[in-house]
Image (cartoon, rainbow, N blue to C red; front, side, top):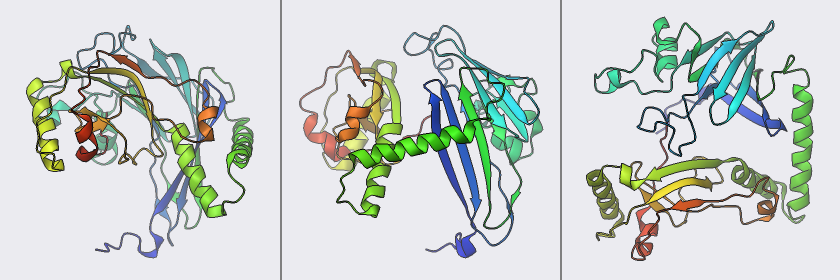
Length: 340
């Protein structure tokens, strides 16, 4: 059914580009393009947050490497520049710079249990604060002290038809006095280097469309890496077997396959794209998300594998796979990730 949402090109294109000045200095350029025939308001909320490891029983994080809670707070910036100090016991201190935002909004990356099951929240500033602030007009949803574990730079305003607005941000371990002085030069240099890289590895016989498709896929493999931690002993046993049994029934295997205890950490998985997870790989079962994952690193099978900046590895602990499982993994399939 055509709902008409794209009639008269009434939509925005959002293009996000990342470039590194060095390994601890990342530039982000966001371009908002109005494809419609009329001016329209566009609100953007580029965000920075810490993965919540403090609310789920991990005193020092799931890998026992975070000896305290991370923290974000606004610091003094120059005219037209907003700055956030980012402190992590594991990663160290970083700074987030945003150019000419309307405001900085702060909250905590914690579930709003009062909304889910009417229980009491641990603090008044929770992860749906930005939605409540913008959509519901709840100005008390964000932290007036301008600190927390989740922050968003608010950009809003009309964009004329056929024109665009550019948002520039920088995440760096260095406190730059002028973080955007050489910003465009660095991005242009990295774009040139990327073109040279793909020109060197792509076969000359490919058409322009084939080169573009291959480049998109390989770029996704290089950039889209995801970390997963899973310990089956920490999950409710009844729910674990119930979820697995349901998945087996839906897939048509109609057999009960037992699993031994499983613990994963430092497992790095890379895909051509974040949403493209339905691939013919041999996955291990993750009951919480009803998802299957391979207990190893999936790396590109192309020349790009030789150009990974760092060796990729998968650490395995207490893994006791059953050989009876192998015949059913492909049939079970997987669903999209939903993570905090």
